[in-house]
Image (cartoon, rainbow, N blue to C red; front, side, top):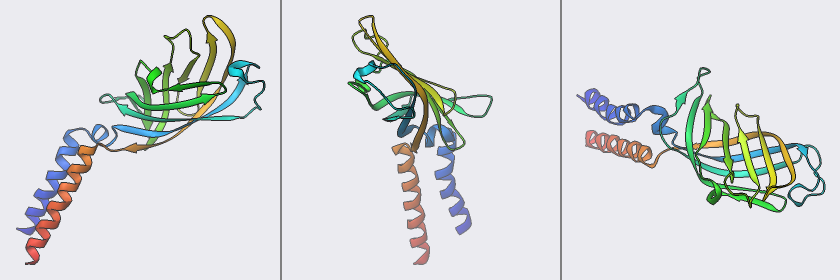
Length: 191
């Protein structure tokens, strides 16, 4: 009887997670940093006179999956994501979440975020553009200091991503309720 009840309680936790799709249920949001290494720099871009080779700019982000991802031939999952938070500053220019219109693409595989792809401010001629491209980390990035059709130069290079997965609140609630159920069942048996 005890083994049957334990099996039923465990299935109450496992089956809903599995039916929602393990990747979707457990990997809906990603939080991390982009490490942008400078490989090419045009003097004067973004108000900077010089940048030593190998300089690293950092961007923080919080990306929320917009749905199930599609599996690539290499087994990595490509998710369309909405940037819930994004912050990057290079010289006299900053980019943030409010400037992002289109979803980014996030590549997830081998238990970690492997890369990002997207553009910021491609629709605003009065603000420099920033774009980041797949393939997997290290990928490429470029910041174009073009304002009102005046090219002030570019900065580009490679990036790596350091991010962690944030589970859905519903998944955590489901797991918590399962644990509370197991605790209550064990307490009842001990009486």
